[in-house]
Amino acid sequence: MFKTPQSLRDSSPIETGEQKGEEHETKKCTGICAYTFFFVSLQRIMDCKTLLYRAKSWLRHQLTAWNTGGEGVHSPYLFEWVRMVMMDTNSYYKWEEIERCREKMLRDERELEFVDYGSAIKSRSLENGSEAAYSLEFRDVRRVCDIARRSLTKRKYAEMLFRLVNWLGRPLLTSPSRGGIGDETLEDRKGLTIVELGLEFRGLTIVELGTSLGVTTAYLAVADSRNKVVTFEGCEAVANIAKENWKRLNISNIECVVGELGVDSLQLTVDSLRGIDVAFIDANHTYASTCEYFNVLADMTHEKSVIVVDDIHYSEEMERAWKEICADERVTSTIDLYQMGLVFFDKHYWKRNYKMRL
Image 1 (cartoon, helix red, strand yellow):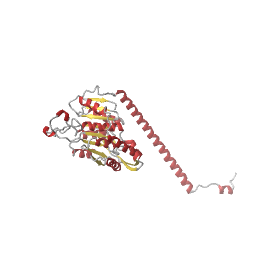
Image 2 (cartoon, one colour):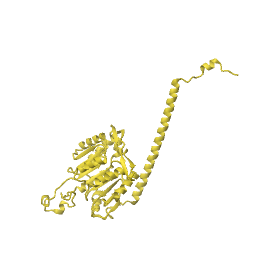
Image 3 (cartoon, helix red, strand yellow):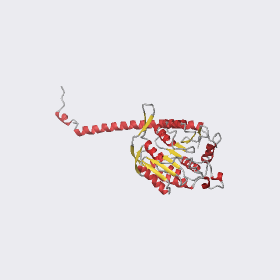
Image 4 (cartoon, helix red, strand yellow):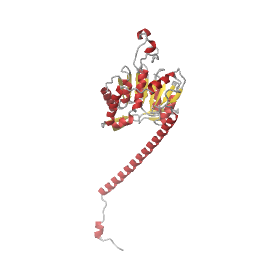
């Protein structure tokens, strides 16, 4: 029988503890890389699915929406809205100042500890078949420019919100007994003073859910310095940058509420207001949260109020929430602009849901 010489046995490799440790670390790194690759691939698949869904939703909207100058809109109130808000091509000097602020945010490389409640809010089913939202706080480090690219409202929609507020706040006379915006302009009552009519001017009360970097908030606020804007932001670091922007723009009629936006905190703040004239919902993009926010705000509206819901075609959940809002008995008319949906409450007109292109 052949035997290995002693010299060869002595020179054969011996696996030491250090080598075993290195092999273990290699296997561990390989496993981590495999898991990372799996989750990244899964995320890309989900992103592709989301993009495909949004593309289908956009195409469906383009094929069914009107590119109208007001024709086919039966409500005189909404017809005026189309002509004075959607079709208005006037520019306002403050817009360029705000857009310079937006450009600065898109170049800002500062890193922030970002607290995101919006993407961490989930829906859960209750025993009665309904859904409720619950929060899982999500923390991350993000650059300001990345936040700006992902969360800022497009300019044409921000300008539309400005024109909406400007239109609602056109010299209107409001009666304290009505508790809402009047529908008579000063031109309709020439020769009579406001005191003789028993009426008074007042600014609008505007509520925004989802401040982000404060660009859209600025558009809502600059229409009239008499307006009061109450805006909610979950991340204190982001809210501080928004406040810097407002200070730079010399805007002083904004109140920012910082912290997790729950139904209870929203209800507490809204109850302290005299009513809501305009509301902009751009917070947690889930069915349960959107419906809960809408219900709280709708209870504080009057017949001339407008609630704007952002990202109504963002996901299946948001589309389901939008359909439920359209079917709400308090709502009389809605306008679907794809990116945003506008909700009206004037009971003088027939219930109708419109799709339009901005």
